[in-house]
Every structure is written in structure tokens, then in C-alpha cells.
Image (cartoon, rainbow, N blue to C red):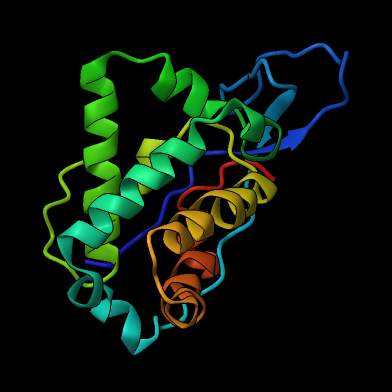
Length: 182
């Protein structure tokens, strides 16, 4: 069976004050964006060999610490202009059960992406991020202002960040799973 990728939607930003209407892809947002068909993602590049060894290098405790830092940083209101408000509206304001589900899924996803055991049972990244209207700039800000500082704070070597973690999360095909707005 041939594998097929389905991207649900993409968005273009509208100027402030422009009225929002229902669109052909059925999505309208309060943040001033509306959906249009996305461009196809480029072919994925192979991850560097060291990416698959990061779990063995930093162990469960390392990923626990990184995950805690990511959640701490991502839920700071000062980052909303850069990374969007989805962490504030979908995580901070959520029930304790939803917050636990999110943090568990985030950590399990990172662990499997970087060579650990596959305990991830959450939705696909496309489904998990559908409707959040994440732009490429917001994704890039999340990586540079949340993920990299989280890795640095817990002591991940800068060479591992640059050579092993970064190539995976900056790969266009990987990124396309999260970015739903142009």
C-alpha cells in the first residue's frame, strides 16, 4: 500500500480588522487568519546518525528535564507573540488531565524521535496540531526560543544540539507535520 500524507489546512494572515468568514476548508480563526490549500512538503532528508543515539546519551532523566523545561518555557505568556497562543489556550487553561496527557505525549514523542523506545500513543502530529493554525515563523520561534533553551538549560552539549537535535526538528518534512498556516 502506498503511503499518503494528508495536510489538513494552511493559512494566510489577514490584516487586523479584516472580517473573518467561513472558508472552503471550514476553518476560521480569531487570530486573524483563514485557511487555504498548503504547498506540498519537500522530501524528507535522512536524520543524522547521532539523532538516534540521543536517548541513549541523555537517558530518561535527560528527556524528563528537557520536557519540563519545554513546557515551562512554552507556557510563558511573554512568548505568545512569537510562538502563538495555542499553549495558553489549549494547555495552560486545560484540565489537569489534559495537561498531563500533553506533557506525556510530548515527552514520549521526543523520546521516540531521538532513538528511545516507542511509547508514544498520542495522535499523529498532523492531527494533534490541526486547527492550531501554526505558522512557519511560530514553529521556528518555538524551536529557537523554547526547545534550544530547554536543551541548553538541562546541559545538552551545544554540539549535540547543532548536529543531532537540530537537523531532525528543522527538516522540512518533519516541520510540515506541525505547520498548518502559510
